[in-house]
Image (cartoon, rainbow, N blue to C red; front, top):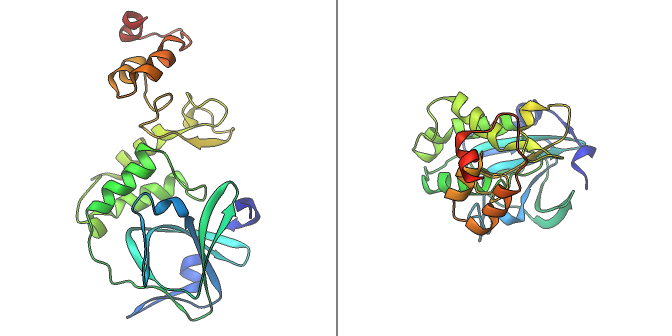
Length: 231
């Protein structure tokens, strides 16, 4: 299964999902996808019910949209399996028309904010169906769903996501500097590319790897005083 086979439709959720007192229902057959690694990241709990972090992909027919709710959504399904979406193993949850997709009664959980930041921002393990705008909307809801305000201004979220959005062919280059190429995510904790300069690399917890990267970093026309001293 390839993500490019499905057209992104921002109106898919409002068009096909309906909120009722007991939860969110889908008018037509639908599927939800999210990475299986969410389990290791404490973003999924598999029990009698399934609790999944609300950064997931909704697929209806040949269209998809992104659920952007920073909370554990409670669901159940008769069809749960793993599939490969591009190069990522994901859970596939299938629902029939008029099924309850997930409950909307959500308990605030501040710990989830830490787990999500660690997985998405620090490690840069962001699902391929997620855009920078998705992350901005997701974290703008943290006060409501997590009981804490991670960012009091959406601009701060946009700045943070722009820092970890890099050029696929040159991870040292921020994607905003070359929008024509393909994008890849680089977590802030990445020992080779996550730090903005050599001083930050050597100040981190990966001295051996960072030292090699710092010393082999190509000089530029504008070199900071810190870089000059380190060299």
